[in-house]
Length: 277
Image (cartoon, rainbow, N blue to C red):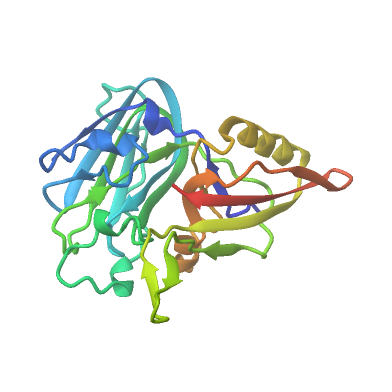
């Protein structure tokens, strides 16, 4: 039985030419290729189609919008075409629930629509669609979120490509935390005053009992990405309890260089800590 872990460390969206069926003003679709959460793509309604084309073959096994305003009822449909001019897709996912969380429950910001204004305070949803890994040169992603109170679809990043699936799941000692840059100090009257900063997410997990093949692949990922290149990791992909997947997935960078150790003969171990981008 394969593990639930999905690791995408090489983002094919960065090599794509992007277009969108609708665009709200200057919030253009090319913003999906940056790692700045304040630079978003926004549609003019609650349905949009994002198209990516490539000059050479890419394998797509997952499509992720790590920072978006999608709701729990939003759907994503991914169509993959062998050639850019093909009329029929080689793969069609059909409409799949995006698996996005509903961050509004944790916020009391009045009538202001949540979206980019909450992305720096752990207020972003993740929308995703896993596909059968397919070689293609064109991808269409149809997002439908008719229940979205904002009246539009918004996203700050597109991540897509083929994922790596290690043989064994992460150890159960998995931690999610939400570090923040707020600083508290006391004034002369002994009041505790807080200079409010941003808040982010950090995911820590152990990959123990890795096979030789998994060790080789994980080492290649570490060497390729280092601490400067982001990756997408989901520890509980397509879990029956959707909140498990929501909490234990992340798009970010490794906090520090990471060692790979030998637990015993032909079994390897490593600890990973990723900070959200």
